[in-house]
Image (cartoon, rainbow, N blue to C red):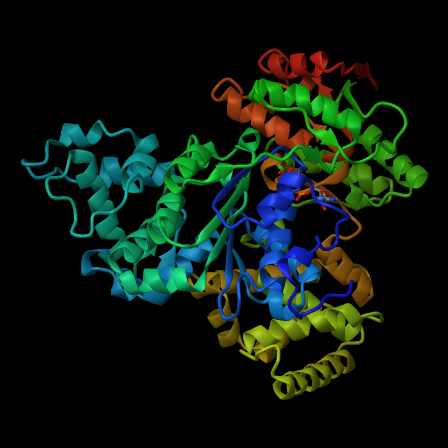
Length: 634
Ligand SMILES: Nc1ncnc2c1ncn2[C@@H]1O[C@H](COP(=O)(O)OP(=O)(O)OP(=O)(O)O)[C@@H](O)[C@H]1O
């Protein structure tokens, strides 16, 4: 694709990389006011943000040195948006999009300005990120907390605080008072004790991401200069998957941008809200429209799924929102036979054997690759992998549990880590035959790490020559992947030290805390060692590392935002959906997310050994309502 850096007149700008956008999408792309775009799956919401970035950058509506801030909830979504913009824009333009997760944004603010917080809220500069759970809060409330001062209440008052909602309601439930609570309730007093011991109880502070979000909000509230700097830098803000916004994130955005000239575009789908357990707000779009005067703009097309799947999606969508409009299917159907069915099996083994045979045959007949399929499960992916993996291996198809742990990092997260991506790109550049496209990737990433401006031709040329000689040396030293864990580790260490550990830490805020960089490097080396097993060549080892030829197995949560030719949902039974009764809406939304990842086909499997279908009768009834048949397969 030819991408130009010259400026385009707004009236002459055309969507890049897609034939057309629907009228409302084009309207949002060109808009200069706050918009909330609520649209169904596959409507092109992420694509709309990529197109809007292209429009703002290419027409000079967001002129240099101003930048666009795009906040996503998951790291791979942030990477995905940046990649789409990089494909559509000249790199001079694409480099002015800062696409990051909320956590990275808040952490970056604390790292830059945190020492300006009032002393009672100031973390140590070397604070660590922690992930406390219900057990930690129970231990704190029941064992670590003494009696409160009489003016606050009694020990019994403290014990009456619900452990389950302590974090959500009290610890990070509201904005932090700059000078502390004046006359705290027992719950506020307990929250303050937790805060003070996390911030000042040891030689360094220990903070969770929600706590960092709250500190970032306070920081911006009490620091008008930092607030103003952000407003000036970012005249445009994008928020993807807005349905999952937490109150903490919303308050931060409100403190920085409400009532300013920054134009906000928020996109999402209420029917895909599956993060309520992780503190997502009840109605973030309504709050945004009321507080920021945002105009709601719906989208009607579905570019992902076949007409038959869009028809079924509509039945499911109506169970979540009776007012939801039927989408217009823009993609054609390409398979014969049923595009959705429930397959019953006598055992998990029979299920695994049949699915492997089916996928192998489909790949052959329709020229599909393993990455066109996904095996989705509700939870405990490892248990399913133990049965499915050997059955697929017997058909010569590697299956890979993306939720599996490599050392201390989840595989899916490892692959989205900057360090892992850079390692793979440098290795591919050095050792693979057709490595052309890795040049640009390495040159761009290293240019950013070394602080070289894209238009500084002399420095870019020096970097290119440096990269070239490093790649040649690497190849000369390792014509094939090294054997043995220590040797693989030393290759990884050599690349990291050539890139410069300090540069990596300086460029990516997440690596500044809590030994995360070491965990990622350990995991990358461990995963490369396993991928290079059996004396394979470099290309095979790196393909295995990235899972290019393996069928992914993942949970619904991890599949958000992704798409596949065929989705096979393993386990439509009460066992997998044991908590269905607890929050039927969220569970049905999860079911909807799983279903809507498919372009052409969705298969559900069931085996009685894992549970009945009575608790989740609602889901089975919905499928029946949509005309889906159940077949006894094996
Ligand atoms: N205008 C368009 N023309 C053609 N294809 C498009 C267009 N917009 C999006 N697509 C394609 O449709 C698919 C879905 O787009 P996208 O991922 O942006 O949807 P989404 O609304 O964010 O989906 P979801 O909420 O289900 O994750 C992608 O493959 C994308 O490339």
